[in-house]
Length: 115
Length: 109
Image (tube, rainbow over all chains, first blue to last red; front, side, top):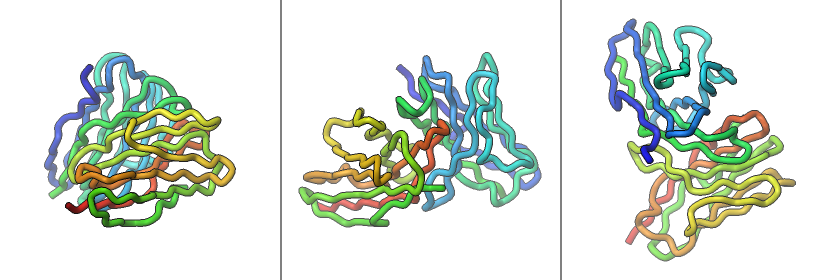
């Protein structure tokens, strides 16, 4: 059973470009979460999605950031007009049910570097 | 609000024990523990649910005091592979995890 997949693993962008990060949840998991982690810091919640729905985006900056989880295909975290402060590791996690009764499993992350 | 973890860091010799604490100011439905090694993804260790149920790694033990909104992770007879940063994630009925700043554990031979 394959785990959570993320690609690319490393992404380099120049300021002003767009970054697209992809996440394929574990088989049978319909809940997806995105987190951002700065070096030597903890994980910060960004957004929680179920298929075709954004459930909670309270941790996501209101400008430049968007996320989707379409009926078919991976979840996408999109960052427009990237700035140096966007450099971080972005982790996706998935769970089979809501988090009250089960946990979430993390993907390997995408390390975004903005030059 | 993110939970508070203590200590920030601990250094152990192989075979020694340690306790990592996680405290929240909010009522908790569940606590989730992860270990992350440098440059890698967090790996699930244990989930503790309101009501006493636990699921997780057979060699790791933890406790959850619902009234005090606290959890502790117990590292017993530590091995070199236990080194890493341990995070607690708390869930307060809003279906998402808030993570502490982490506790860095270094186990030396």
